[in-house]
Length: 481
Image (cartoon, rainbow, N blue to C red; front, side, top):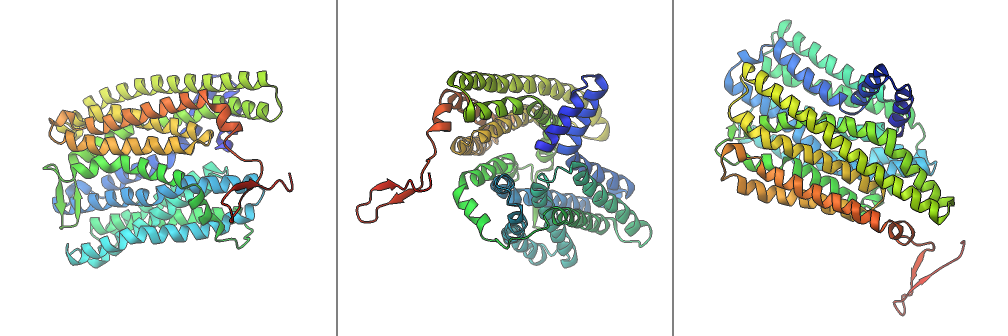
C-alpha cells in the first residue's frame, strides 16, 4: 500500500477541507471502491430489469446464486492472499520482479484447482439433485470462476500502484454488466433471471481479464521459476491459516443460521437464511468505512514511525531505538483509538438512518433487530483485523494466527448457543467471537511492545544452521559472514 501512502501524504499535506475530502475520496476508491461499485451495479440492474416483478421462486434462486458466488469465491481465494503478498513484497525488495509473473501463473493454477474442488461438485449437485437447468448452473459457475480470478488478481495488482486503473477495470466490467443485462432483456427478450446471471458472469470475467492484462503489462519478464512460490506456503503456513480462519469466522455464523427455521432451500441446492443474511450485510456496510479510515491513518501517520524505528535499528544508538519504539507504539494506540471513535460515531449515525429509511423499502422488523448486535460485532471484527495487520508488521505470525483461530472458534460456539436466544440476540455469538479475537490481538500488541527487542534481535539467525547427522547436534557454518 506504499503507493496509496505516497499519494495520501501528498494530498493531506495541504491541510485544508478540500484536501481532506480529496484524500478520503482517494482512499475510498482505492480500498472499498470496487466492492461498492459491484453492489451499486447489482442494485441498478435489479431496478432497470424489474427484479421485484419476477416470480418469488425465481428471485430466491437468483439472489441465492449471487450470494453463493460472492461468499465461496472469497472463501477459496482469501487463504492464498497473505502468503502471496509476502512473496511479491520479498521479490520486489530483492529486485527479482521476473519471478512474480511465474508465481502468478502457478498460484492461480493452484487456486483454480482448489476453487473447482468446491464449485464443480456443487454445480453437478444443482443439475442432478436440484434439477436446475444445466445452462443456468454453467453460467453461474463461470461467474464464480470470474470472481475467483478477480479476487486473486487483486493481490498482485496492489504492487502496481495503479489504483485508479484497478478501479477502472471494475468500472468497465460492471458497466458492461449493466449494458448486457438491459440488451438481453429489452432487445433479445431473454428472461430476467438468465439475463442478470449471464451479465454478471461476463462482467466478472472481463474484469478479471483486464486485471490479468495489467499484470502482464507490468511484470513483462518471466524467469520460469514456477515452483518457488509453493515453498512460501510451507514456510509461511501461519499466514495462510490466519486468513483462512479469519474468513471462515466472517461467515461461519451465517452457515449456522442456515440450519435454523430462518432458512430457505431453493431447488434442493441453495440454502440460506435471508433475514439473518440481510442483517449481516447491513452490519458490514455500516462499518465498511473502517478500512478507509485505517488506510488513511496508517499510511499518513504510523508508517512514518515504523520506518523511523527500522532505520534506528540499523544504525541508531540504544537510546534512539528506545525512543523510536516508544513513538511507534504510541502511534498504534492513538490510531486505534481514533479509528474506534470515528467508526463508532459513523456506525451509530448510519444505524439511526437505517432505522428510518429501510422500513420504507420493506426492510425492517426482525432484520433490524438482528442488525444491532451484528453492527457492534463487525466494528470489533474490523478493528481486530487492523490489529492483525499491525502484528504482521512485526512478523509475529503465530499471534496473528491465534487471533484468527480464537475469533473463529468462539464465533462458532457462540453462534450455536445464540440459536436458542431471542432474535434480537442472534448476533451475540459473532459478537463474542469478535470481542475475544480483538482482546487477544490487543494484548498481543502489548506483549510485542514489551518483548520487541527479542523479536527483532533474537528471533533470527545470522548464520545458516547445519545438523550434524552423525551426532544430531546443531552447529553453525560461518562461511561467508
